[in-house]
Length: 271
Ligand SMILES: Nc1ncnc2c1ncn2[C@@H]1O[C@H](COP(=O)(O)OP(=O)(O)O)[C@@H](O)[C@H]1O
Ligand SMILES: [Mg+2]
Image (cartoon, rainbow, N blue to C red):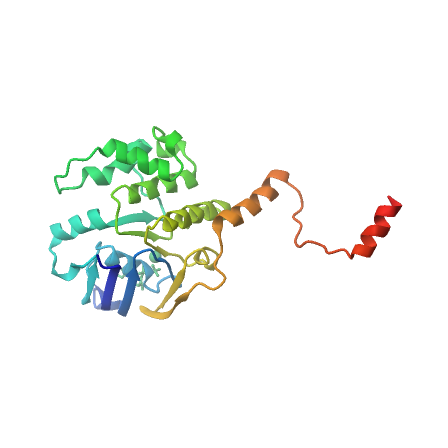
């Protein structure tokens, strides 16, 4: 088995709207290996979502070619694209995109029910297992309205994982979450990546990108920077640190104050 999940060559995407052409992607070359955790960064309008949609087979490029898991995507028709999407890619979106008045379990089961390969699988058991992986084993019967934003996003991540995709694509997954919940979701992504899940995550927030392993920066439809994350952060550790502050509800101590040993001895003597 090849360890390349995505191989995109010279991808362009031009949107025609009336007499106007918008060049959203102007030649993207990108290789993603198994086990990578990439943050795609860039300002609003730089082409991040367009790139995501192309990589995720939700949209076709105007030119260029693209392999996912050794399959030439540009040769596929609509039905074949849908099948590849279902089998190989798990999606996570900013707005969670869960079905309302539908339990977490049924939401997570959905991609398995759309699977047209005819495989016999216990979709219920698989959905329960996926919810367990994101720490929601005790919420399987809850509907989205009965869950917090962070929990809803975890349901969406379970839904992305349930098909055991080659790749998880997440478009601004923390965009609707407060900063603490964002770190929680990033700690889940880091844990899943440790387990071997390949992740491409779109964000415009540098605070979120530091949890990835590699940063790809897009500007005007081109990749302007592609490098490993310097000073990568551990979300679980960051969470533990903010927890102390939340629980104690005290003024945070910014940095430890180093007191010379002699002073301590004197103070001790006085007290
Ligand atoms: N369906 C569309 N039709 C026309 N133009 C679009 C469409 N989708 C995106 N664009 C344009 O393509 C460019 C890139 O958009 P997008 O990929 O959504 O950027 P980002 O996700 O980085 O904010 C923008 O100029 C945007 O207005
Ligand atoms: Mg976008």
